[in-house]
Length: 333
Image (cartoon, rainbow, N blue to C red):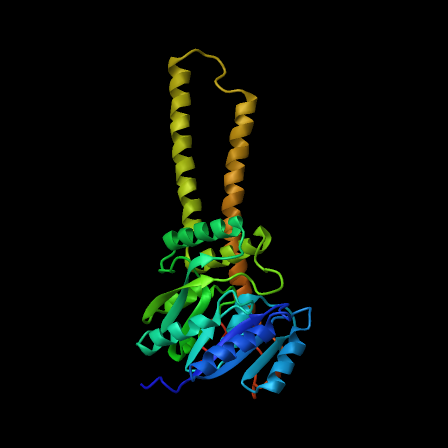
């Protein structure tokens, strides 16, 4: 198929980015117009508290290639990215952050790989500018952990910055899970994938959104519980280990009682510590099971993934993404 004159969609979730959007538009226009591409820019306002919605409306009024959605509230980056993919019309869709840390100047290299036959072209962070040592270190550890405990091959040192062929976008649209981890969902789909190295720039303006453990931990839990049963298996392994230790301890106590001096073997403090330790193991195991059950509960409620309050340049914006009832055919059938 000739991909020289296809429509290219750029999807960027937006949350309190009024100081960045003009620069994002200018750089996207300069890169893609300079390359002779036909393109659209889909901006998804994820319940911003600043003037981001007004800036999107102004950019659309000045250039109809800028499209926009505005959520009824904040639903999170992964859901905003999903809504952008739902509304993008391009034959290739580039998902990017709005803060210009993923430079538009990398788009031509991605498009070249797409035209060479690859269905997914993901950005590999060769270097990261303007990020704290804590965030860089924890990110490296997390991706190496998720790489080892999941059944899919998630590329190391990558984020959500990637180009997706229309076939991949359509496949993602058929996946309705609520606790979404797109960085794992895309490799799970398969197709031909390749990485392009780039220098991740410092944020152009505004404040970083994922800098605290409070925000990063739920994201990590979504990633692990969506693609791995390892925590459940770990709880089972710990249970068997503790059972084996208990059996050995019981045998040792019996032998000492029969062969050793008839004196108390253990004091009250030791017994208390053992009970507290076993109770802690049980609570941790219940907590792991609760994480999985909570996600199942979210899925069976069947609420829409997002709700749209306003749109610009999108003729028939979806009211939201609904998961099909359990046991029924998928929405695309």
